[in-house]
Length: 372
Image (cartoon, rainbow, N blue to C red; front, side, top):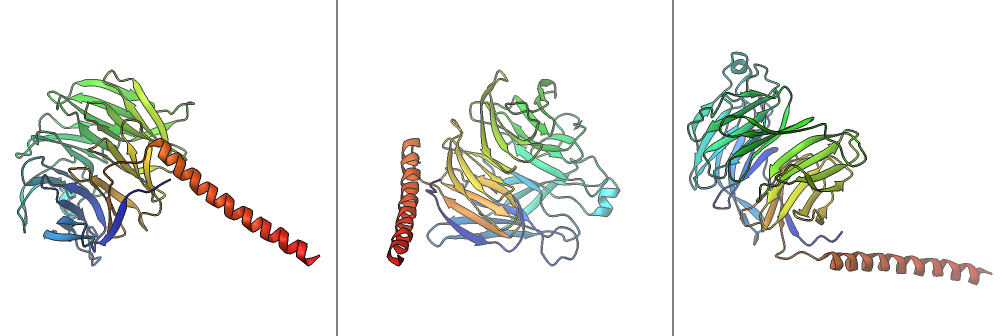
């Protein structure tokens, strides 16, 4: 598979758990060593991309409490210099029902400041946390999904509930808003729920996920695209394959393609008609969002679990982050090879391999003849 993207590696010095991109195209990273005295600080950091020096330049940083967890997910405001991030409070506060995990931050060129916080996880166990979060197109609402099944939708910046929190009864893997903000989607292993953002009324439920042939799968990600089509990621329960399934606004499967033999662990929709994902086998892959054709596949992108992916605002960069304390920055081409160009390139590679093999075989045969 041709790899038309140039990339560079940046060591950021802490395990990264989440990525966001500001409306000024800055990269926001959250992560750290979690609660305790591991020696690895919990942080929120903002960087600017610098392709000329192949680096991420640090603009602002906020060191967080070591008594609390590291940031687990974040969502950027589309216009303002604010973002919402989920950070579990200390174990003692969680047991007391005081886990104000949902936190609103503002930032300047050199500083990050917490401005408000609220509770959006119902559990009193420090094992549970908010796993996923998304902000609406207008920046007026945030939806979050937790490992204890709490589905929360709050107003921004007030962080007041839009409607009472919902118990999904199982771990929520992903959440998102439709572009017109009429709907939100929440994905658990066994079902997708599409709800009205006005009153949480159920619009559609899709359960018992299966791939063609009837093999059972789990819903890992669910995101609305630009035309309110719904992109979902299905990992087989046997963990031997991953599929991207696209649903029309009539809730009919309009496309499905097997894209990996390994489970997908993180997923991103981007501009310019692209999507990207990373796998448990540490591959980073970019696809055409319309055809689901693989455009780029990078093996061994990181040395440890890939935790987050994000496109920048103009779709010219893809950033992957990992628990290995590094980020990979992929500088994406303006145009991608056509299927024919890809086939020709692959064919040329195979022809070169075959030619080398024939030369080696002839050399061995010639050597045997000369020995006689």
